[in-house]
Each structure stands twice: as structure tokens, then as C-alpha cells.
Amino acid sequence: MGKAGPKPYTWPQVLVSIDARTQVGQSDQCWPWLGGKTTAGYATINARAFADQPLLVHRIVLERKLGRRLVKGEEAMHTCDNPPCLNPGHLRVGSHADNMRDAKAKGRLKIGGRTSATWTKDKPYNRHAVQA
Ligand SMILES: [Zn+2]
Image 1 (tube, rainbow, N blue to C red):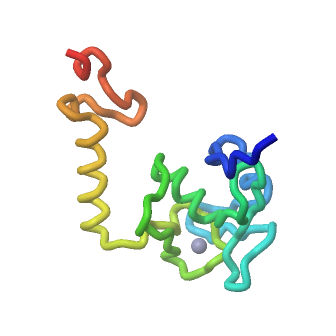
Image 2 (spheres, rainbow, N blue to C red):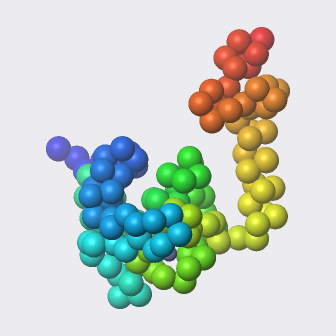
């Protein structure tokens, strides 16, 4: 049996483990992590089925909030400066807000192509229009 290397983790499986160890509070409070942490205090989770190294939980939580994976160069930042916090409302992408809006707009155009006007989260593309 050859080692295929780490598989990309799937959100549903990882998120169940994350939610079980997050002390969810009010939307304006910090939500502390009850599991393991890095020396800097960031929440980590071992997901050996998906990754060789422990995953940084706040990145995954931010990805869930965004509805997409973070790409190279993007960092998950805490607006509350509280490393173990996992309140999605306290997490943002670590780039300028204008850059973020720009990237989102470009991403939408890329995904939707000629049908960008019909792109929505629930309906990534209009199949008939794309293939026409
Ligand atoms: Zn917080």
C-alpha cells in the first residue's frame, strides 16, 4: 500500500470535531477553543486523515465563514487579538479590506465566467449558459 500523501480535508468531517471543542458564546463574545493549542495560543486540531500537520482551527472556521478555502498569501486574522478565539465574527482575512473585496469580485467573475451575473453561493454556475 503506497502512501498517497495527505488528502485534502473535507469540511463536514473536520467541522464536527471543531464544533465539539468550541465553547460557543454570544455573537459578540470570544469563543474559546477547548482542545490543543500552539505555543502562540492558536487552536489546533489533529486531522491525520487529511493532513500530516495539525490544522489551525481558526483558518478552517474562517474558511467556513467565507465559503471557500484560503489561498496562498491569505491569513486568518483575529479582530479581537485573542488567538484561541473561534468566533467567526472575530475572524477576517489578513489583507486590506479593499483587496479582499477585489479578490472576491475577481473570484466571482472567474467562477461564473460569462454567467457571472447569475452566480450565487447556492448555485455556483448556470450550466446551460456556461455550455452555450
Ligand atoms: Zn474573539
